Image (cartoon, rainbow, N blue to C red; front, side):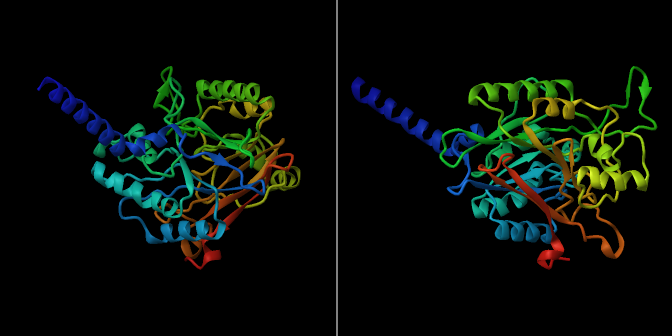
Length: 365
């Protein structure tokens, strides 16, 4: 009787463990170990950047149609949803999860690997729903093809991480993706001084800059060489503005025309570079390390330009979401779209080119 009881207990425990393993299978993707990122057999890799979906559980169908058509045409290896995926209109956790499911399905339906960064609006619903960025990251990571990680510990923000892309032989890293949480808004004041007259979005903190620098060094030590990379963050760096005018202080058409030639600028600027009141020094750190080939943002929905700023491309992706503001008037939706990146492991810089794709190219108004 005792032997039978013991056997029964062992079987019951085994069943529980098997059931737990099965029901939590999606959690295994949180380590990013189940789905490796790798260049194809031709040594090529393609990334699509979607920015500022900024919608709720009743998403504008044109946003999904645009994402679908871009993914079908480009057939990318990786999609980056670079902040402000959600807005303030959700009332419950269930509505947040439905909103996330809406924007996850274009990639999930096609088996495209994808990752997110957070923007300044992603927690606008939090006072009502109780779901913060950490909660939302758990939901994002529960999807089969999501490759986010929990993020570096003990530094500012949620989900700061890097994603290594192996070469076509899967023998060593050929490229790297940096994902940064660029925060939300500046505090009301510091040292009893307010920010009247300054831009009041957030900025990358020193611990994030230090984490990037140290992680970049460790990656070089591990591989024996600097690994070329792209960085994605929602709020742009101040250098985006400096590049547009080829100056940190001049704001004239003449200085911009000089910048177009000097920095090879392509695309439009229709609003401010809406950054924080302080320069974090991230660009200087990337310039010194020499591994980042480009920094790409969103946030400013109707800016689509890209240029080469002292060897590092700085660029926008515009807005893919029809729930976000546009140009206004008859041209309101003209710049809605996505950005695509072509990588080739046989090219010296690996990043071959990047360009904007617009909704009007797909017949979406």
